[in-house]
Image (cartoon, rainbow, N blue to C red; front, side, top):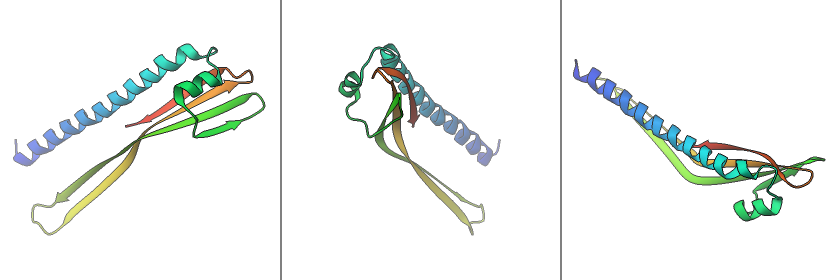
Length: 123
């Protein structure tokens, strides 16, 4: 196997491993939300959720539904990559960064009890 092909195969497997790690972190966090919030559906009041999560960053409401949104940032991650052709006269490079965060949305019914929730986790 040529050295360049070997390096490409190793790089591919490293990429698979690291992308899998981020996916596992997302699943772990979503499981934590599920274990924490599912037992509270139909039982927890707005005051209970204020104690648990604090003041929401955003609130909205309709006649019989109130929505609270929480956004928790964990900083940013970045990736970069560069390529130079074998002859050395062109080089291409790019980079990307993104925020690592949790977004949790709580829905309350007209009586003020937790009706449902949803979460989005970016890792």
